[in-house]
Image (cartoon, rainbow, N blue to C red; front, side, top):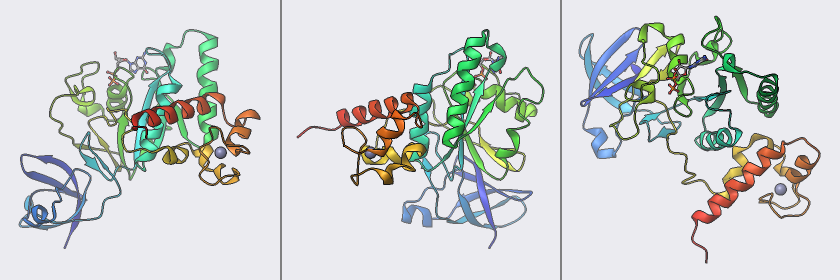
Length: 294
Ligand code: GDP
Ligand code: ZN
């Protein structure tokens, strides 16, 4: 039986892409029995009745699943943060990073609108943040939609993967996708269309082919709550803490007040930026406050 990827779901139909073929499928009753609703991003076994129509027979095991937008098997999140307008915010970036890491998705950091930087001071600051995040191990790209070839370095990372854009409204997500796929002509700065779609409309998501990969046409991670994330999980959402936490004296160290903590030592000697640790502490507090105290 052939296999393909659901790239679009609409009115009870699942559109399955298998190489060059694009087949409109209905689900067979098995899904209702197993309580599985096929999602955009699913790898499925299907049966084609002809060149255009068929049935989804089986949904293969998912790697992950997002609720908003409803999509699964997301490989990476392209996290767009503008250098200015709005100003670069490492606090918000770290919040997004935690949510993305917690979903087992690889974050790619894009610092956009670098052409709008007005002062040497801001330029140095943005560059220093970019260096910090690179040092942690993240891919960081500086982009501008007004400079030719600004995306040439970034483009290949979209190949063979399912990517979802994330980031505040107005940072340039639609503009970037327009550069990647000029034929789409997404409206920029218009929250009722595509990437900037308003929060409360019914979500419909579609995977757009870009190179040999796919990009979701709706941004992800619109809710920035740490629902479902526990304090113990947080260390794993900060790669520079995860790699050092084995050296803490206490197993299960939360790196707050425990003695002989490898994370606090790394902050003190400058190996971990102070602001990253401060954000970690504020997230710990936030998660504590979420819980009823006994
Ligand atoms: P979105 O809400 O994240 O999709 O942001 P948009 O793509 O709609 O961009 C918001 C505004 O910023 C639009 O007016 C864009 O033209 C502008 N913009 C986006 N990226 C850049 C950039 O790299 N340089 C400049 N100068 N303007 C940009
Ligand atoms: Zn520790």
